Length: 95
Image (cartoon, rainbow, N blue to C red; front, side, top):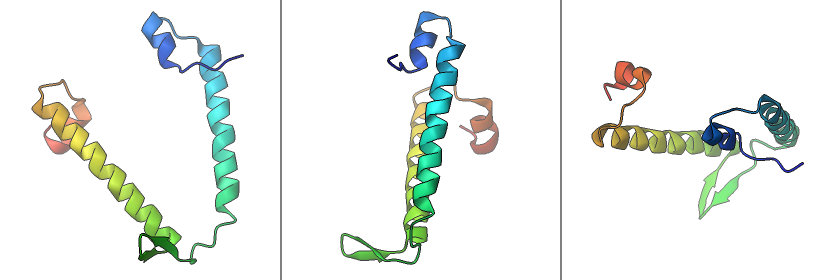
């Protein structure tokens, strides 16, 4: 069986919940693999990022902050473009 993104069901106007379950289990399997890999990581080992040393903890913190900036940019652009933003964005950030 070829896995199709759940969004295809939304495009058709009808969700295939069996497909969602398949996707959920596939994602859960990948998460378990990632967690198993992370247990082997030496979090104090330096990571050379273009000449700048990072620890694993600092790298992950930087990554999360970097992604948060992208979310903020998208939120602001959506608001400036006049898109109807989610109520939580309007309540929290005035967007």
